[in-house]
Length: 227
Image (tube, rainbow, N blue to C red; front, side):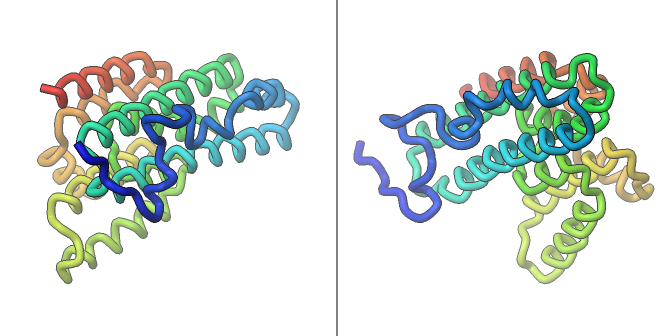
């Protein structure tokens, strides 16, 4: 079968014949554990560590976003394989985060939102890279702004209903996890529209140490999609 030609942002996606460790992790190693050593040295170092981790997450989210934008230019099996590899990289990132946060309550407070956002992406409960970014950075104001923009786009026909529903579910779930109060209408929207993956994420993400459960859920979703 002839391979589709990639252009634009698609040219930066991992190639089957190329280096598998592209995207965030190409820049991540071997410096990662040096960053871990910095974690307990004070406020400035913690801030630097958080910034470094956010940059790595941004790169992975950009890789996911590029993949979705280039989906039409990829063969179906290449798309699935590349997405699976990116989710595996997120899993490795999540494992590393757990090691960093272990026994350090300051880092737990700083990075808990990031870990929850990564878990949401791994389990595929969240599928919108920009929402995952804002969730990870604990930006409820920007999440609400995005939701307001989506409401306007839906009214003028710029956004399809199914896309709107998925992204609104993600935003409302993120807001609730960040401790934001939702309206009765928003709570009803969540109850009515939440799918299995999102409902399961709600259950297992109550405990920040539940990464293994989320990874198990992600594996279940991957296998289910193959059938």
